[in-house]
Length: 384
Image (cartoon, rainbow, N blue to C red; front, side, top):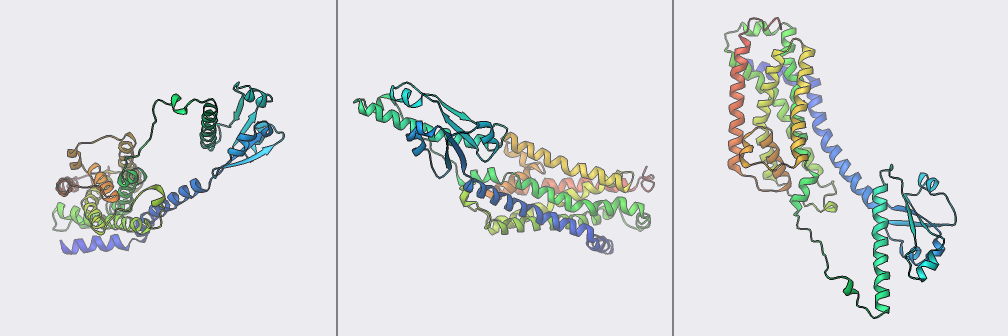
């Protein structure tokens, strides 16, 4: 079996297209994640809501107190709210003509808040202005009550104070929730080209028949091909993990209230648990490619096959389903939970990781036996 394994490894690692695909995608998504996180934080910190005030002379208190680091206030004598919103302003605040008189008579004057809900920034702009106006309104109420000898706390029977009990790891789970799925998808993509070439590709090149004529058992052939394909997939996942950990110091995690919790031990653990999954993905892709009718058919089937698991994992994350610990025995689901825990610093049970990895290896053995039976099919070489 040693010459066979050497032959499969050489063919896999000499395929420059497969190697470039594995390396490029493995490095691409950590860079995109780091860049996207940096851009998001920078945009939130530098974004300023531009407010246009119409009739500001009727409400000098509001026009003076409304300005804040998040609000850039401009006083205008005239203007059409629709045109101003279509221009450089995010929100328009207009005061009624009788604002001063009604305010002095303690009759609630009218304030008009114009927004364009079709703009993506309208929700943030309206929230910023309403929070600032609410604080000013509370200040005026307190001053009026104090001037009349009424304690302001009379109208506030209790105080509500919000306290965030989340931990850095739980906040990190929200930001890094998609990373495990992308790591698993990297493994699928890195294995794809080599899996198709070593099965359907060899069949079309007529190099599979001489291999089947050799005095080798079917499980030996499938095992050698699985190891060769899995080596590229494992390389891709290791590169993705290394790039992600290397880019974490560059990512503005502290601005998001997240502490770095990834240690050297957790990085090694992530690499180790990806090895059984790489073997399972490789053998399943080889089996699907052997059942296909042609090289193109194999590529199409495997492209769909690599998207389905990612969609399932994303649905579990979006639905925030609380899974029992026994779900860790299921491949993909268990790997997602382990990778997430190792990334954000949550405790991960070594017993469950070992048990889940053994279940994955057991499925690999079953798939290899199925592949050995597939090699004995009379119509295998005809691909019908």
